[in-house]
Image 1 (tube, rainbow, N blue to C red):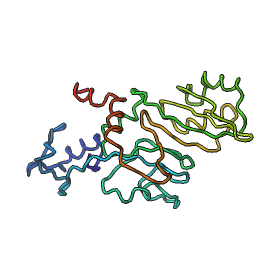
Image 2 (cartoon, helix red, strand yellow; image 1 turned 60 degrees about the vertical axis):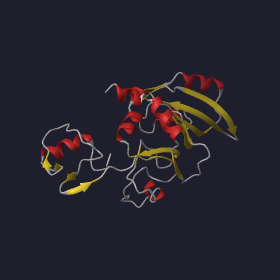
Image 3 (cartoon, rainbow, N blue to C red; image 1 turned 90 degrees about the horizontal axis):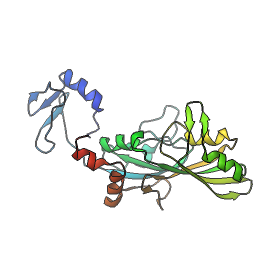
Image 4 (cartoon, rainbow, N blue to C red; image 1 turned 120 degrees about the vertical axis):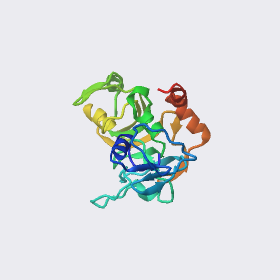
Length: 238
């Protein structure tokens, strides 16, 4: 939650004697911290709990979903959120040449739940593909296809319109395999020319301008947590 480390690596910090709470060395894995009153030091440095932030970003194409500098000099989304003081991280990714909705947060528990396939949170995309998709091919797409890493079955797919010799389709997947949408359409010999994510679960990109971000509303945060049973499972200690 403070952007120091992952949960797994936090155990290593404790084992290596790097964690001090209220002046006492901690050696108990799973030690419970009072985030309001406890004084916490990691490797001699005091840390504080950051305010939870939940952001929506409309990623333009030709930006990496990365917060570090790219060795090849490509632009990253870090440039788009440099005015955000908290250390927020993207939940999932979009390809370099894809655009659309990204959720960024410093709430690690929520982020992992969004990404976990168990909760089947749908991701919806619009895709401009090369060629006019026929009704017969659309029916075949509905039934899914076999890719090199297993079967790909869209939760929903529909043809929106034709644009000259190309087609615009809306497709929904609840899984997040690498380049899944592009590989799916390529399997039917319709290469993707433009890809945009427009929805993650109940969260829609709406009228958010390309390259801009905004805080999620309380209503959006609540609906997202409800979609992945976040608050209910926390109360049940699952």
